[in-house]
Image 1 (cartoon, rainbow over the protein chains, first blue to last red):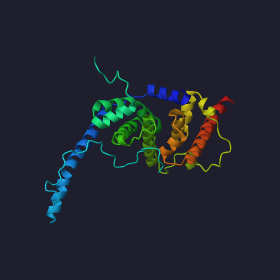
Image 2: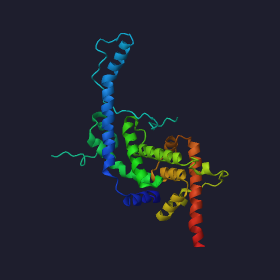
Image 3: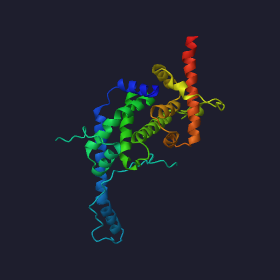
Image 4: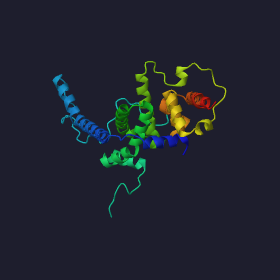
Length: 89
Length: 193
């Protein structure tokens, strides 16, 4: 362990407590985003079909393209500035 | 036999895979519990404000978990987390500063340095003096030194973090080391005379 790492250890020892609420807030935010993503998945195609029909068009799928599977993946960060690998920009 | 995540050692990569597959909160808690203190420590070190550091820690972890599927596993998970942390804090500091200059080579028009400061010059500093030096030098210089010597990041990893070429990072490191040594000599060597 070099002096930079020993400095980090000392700073962590004297660190104020990170409020528990921060972790809970992150977890709840992720849950909320996941729920909204699932709802969009479920209803967006239906909403689009309604607008198409209102505009005089025909809905291409008889069941309004309802796909109940939904996304189980993690919703993505809209900013998209997170490193994903060694490829340079 | 009671199965507990605490007794079974699971690698970060496995925790990530389980979390992405199941979205189970226990995997989130494991990852958050393991890295939150270090992330918070780095935020306080760079931002120098507990309140801002708390907000930053929250935003950083949100970013981490929203982009967990992008972690390719080509570097250590800790390196990836710390990259996001440094980037976030540096962006925050740049927005706050009117000039946006946070590295020595942005602040000063210094001539090209002929001599490279050896790593030993920094690594032999006492911890207390090192802390004082790091708090005085520009925050961008501090960040590259921490990435290199505290987090053992390679030049390639630092260049990806800061979105600069490897030669630019080598120059920033060279100037940061020079700046740190100069501050050290001005502050501590003069007191000895």
